[in-house]
Image (cartoon, rainbow, N blue to C red; front, side):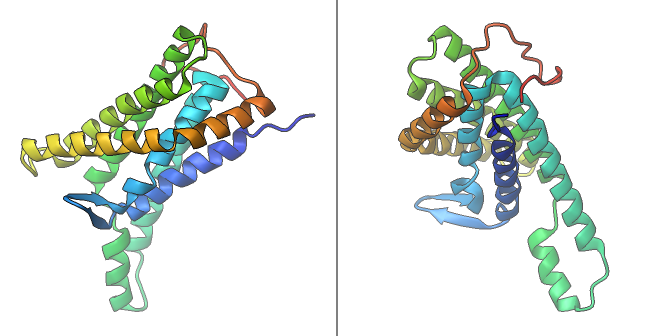
Length: 222
């Protein structure tokens, strides 16, 4: 029986999300912008989302997104418990907490943002694939990422920082992060083509002519 790559893609997606939220505690400067260290890794989650939707369809992507959300929830819970446990070395415990302590509002905002953004990304990718009859992959990946990243960043910035920073700052966060991540997607489009082509030869592909786009529908797929 032919093995599927689906579980490996699912694992990669969950790992990228968990690592992104872990390194996001560090702020870095990129020219005139200040972003978290996750800015270079997090867009990979949307690239994987595009690949999954292109190969396995919206139903296949839906299951992977829920697994990613569960992985993030487990990460947040694990870090919270670990920080609360009594430590032998108080100095180390202080450093440990400074790095891994989770701010509940930010954690919730991040998970809701990713959830909304990934499903928006997959929906656009799925519908455009049907409308273009599978052509112009570059246009579909860039368009879906622009929508998904904008939704993700807008939800995260609003829920995480409303009434904490000025609305003009939140607007700048949404605009700059969504633009950068979309440009990131456009830059690696040739690599996306290679991965999608290889996976289609191995797995085949799905066209969502009839699919339930509810995030809560029973997941079809592998």
